[in-house]
Image 1 (tube, rainbow, N blue to C red):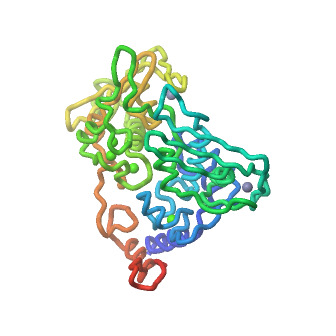
Image 2: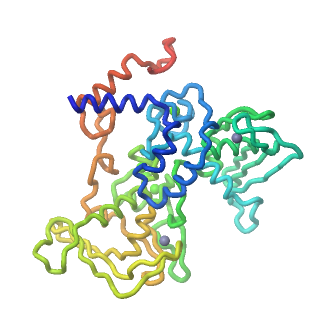
Image 3: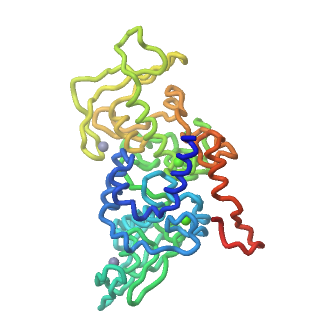
Length: 396
Ligand SMILES: [Ca+2]
Ligand SMILES: [Ca+2]
Ligand SMILES: [Ca+2]
Ligand SMILES: [Ca+2]
Ligand SMILES: [Zn+2]
Ligand SMILES: [Zn+2]
């Protein structure tokens, strides 16, 4: 009975538009990862009045069903990455950030680099929502590598900053072409970028590349050879459909698991299962990216059932927390943690939804069990239809 009630409450929550509770929820959400701090800051400053409703948007996440289909997102799930922010809002804010960071002109040293050309005009238009005076000009985004260009009114960027791909002003009204925009900006998922996520082709002087290979067919920051060693899909950047790039997600999950492992003393009889032994040292190591200092020592992680152990320097844990298997510090130098070895020693996956857990066909709410909650979900969607030959508009 309690479970049924919970399922009902879940349904009630899902029916309410996420947009209105995002500020409070965003601040309190389980976004414990440092990488999300920027996003939360950006989200809390939003003026939600700009988040114009979109036609044909069943889950009301401000991405239309067709856009979600084109992007490979789930049209019936408003918050696919469980960040307490609607997917469309989060994505728009991320795009505004990416546009703000673009350099202003073509870079002769790096001909493949994405850039923007701002063409302000002598005049302003007023934003329909907040009345701000926005330059009536345009901004052109150019991705020379892909041969893609997008022209946007500056007003569209103003709305994107507040979480909306639709815009309305005195002069310009409409909606950005979201799939083209994302491809041009090389943005695939929402979430905040983190400089610790070093590109796979990063090289160190004299030491060559730090990743085993720089091929990353799906761009999820796991090299093809690592995906093969892990048994993952090298054609899919988000195998578990939670809008988190799998390489970043896996690194962060490993960091969480290592942090929670029981610590035992060396040679202790308590050493059973998976545990870690501290080999901290008297000295610090500096992160080359953010300048934070961590202990220069390491954790010895042991899986007693397998009879194997692995040394993981604290600096590596720091980079894993930031979603990166590549690391760079002043004691251990630059290198790459071995994803497949960590995967084996930690006995991954650990919980439902982790990469590698199999989705059951009838598990509608994705909790790895087929039970009454799924039946309630099915009842809620009963008689919905997307069959184009039936004149019923869309699922309830
Ligand atoms: Ca939607
Ligand atoms: Ca990959
Ligand atoms: Ca992959
Ligand atoms: Ca994922
Ligand atoms: Zn405005
Ligand atoms: Zn750092």
